[in-house]
Length: 165
Image (tube, rainbow, N blue to C red; front, side, top):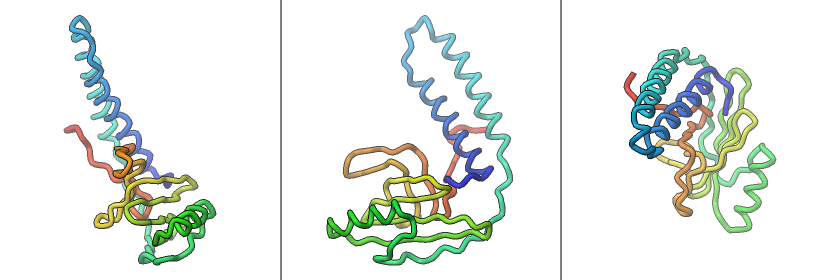
C-alpha cells in the first residue's frame, strides 16, 4: 500500500467499521445487551469522529501504462509468479503505474487473479477487469471472501463508508 495520508485514513476507517460490525455480531447473552448497546454507541461515535477527519487527497500525477500482454514484471517476486504462470500455460498482462513522486505500482493479471506490489508490499487477490481493481485476498475459485481491501491500479484504497456520518 502506498503510504499516503488518504490510504492510512481509509485503512483505519475500514478497521474501525469492521470492529463495529464484529461488535454487532458477537452474540452476547441477554444480560449483556445493555453493555453491548453502550459499546456500540461509543464505537459508532468513534467511527463518525474518524470519518470526520478525512484528509485532503495528495495530488499526484500518474502515468498508467496499458496492459502489456506477456510482459515481464520489473519486480522480482512478480517475475517469480510469472514463471509459475508460464509452467501452467497461462497468459498474463502487466500494468505499470508511476507517479510524479517516483512511486511505482506494478500489477500482474492472469485470468481473474492478480498480484500487486505497491509501497514495497505485495497483495494477491481477485481482479475486476471492468473496474481495473484488485480485491485483496479474494479468490472466487477457492471460495475466499477476501480482506475487504480494494486497490486501484495506482495503489489507492477504494473506500466507501458503511455508516452514515
